[in-house]
Image (cartoon, rainbow, N blue to C red; front, side, top):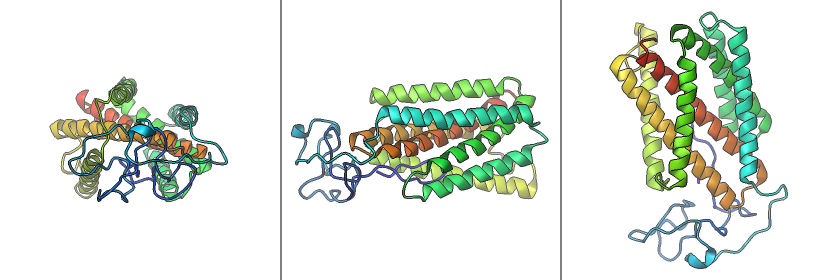
Length: 298
């Protein structure tokens, strides 16, 4: 499976080719390999179903699935577990938070916006490098977390200067979205299918392009460009941004679930942590902007 993030496409977990249950045929508890004349059989899509076929539980025992799978030896470094994902995510998010607090205390938000922009560009650059790496590089991911934290600290201090309490409200809103999506995903209220992925990715591409055009218009003509980040339109697009972030969060949860089910190598937990961090930063920034507009600020 290739999972995507609101900012760019990143490598995800797949069953095509490979060994040790990662990039390999279906494992126990994983989706069965498509059989017969199913045109999606070679697509590597873990959600693919033959047209008209009844949905099947991708984590059902092997004897309840079509076809057979054979167990594979564990990777040399061990298989990824939920504990691995939680610990790596804690490290990455922890660095973001520490760097954000440090930059909040050290820099004046309004006077240091240029520095914050440089940190954001540096973080984006490191994220892009990691996105095109075949394997996760912890040093890149942790460096990204530090730079992202510096940017978040500066921009948060800036917003909080004009809208008192905006940061705390954005943090609480981000936490509410995270736990809400987690519960909805675990209860299967949200189901991440191939169609769901295509729709979310398409919507996110359109959203990012619109925001880029709005930013370009603002740089050329001043003000807020086309007005997509202020007033009523700003509220609408802020809500859309949060909803898109929530959808990508569900896709991140599916990525983690599939990685564990397929027996992904242990170091892939860094990719899961990286993806979750990217998505949470996206949601927080959209929340911060939305709160500022609703409170009558920037």
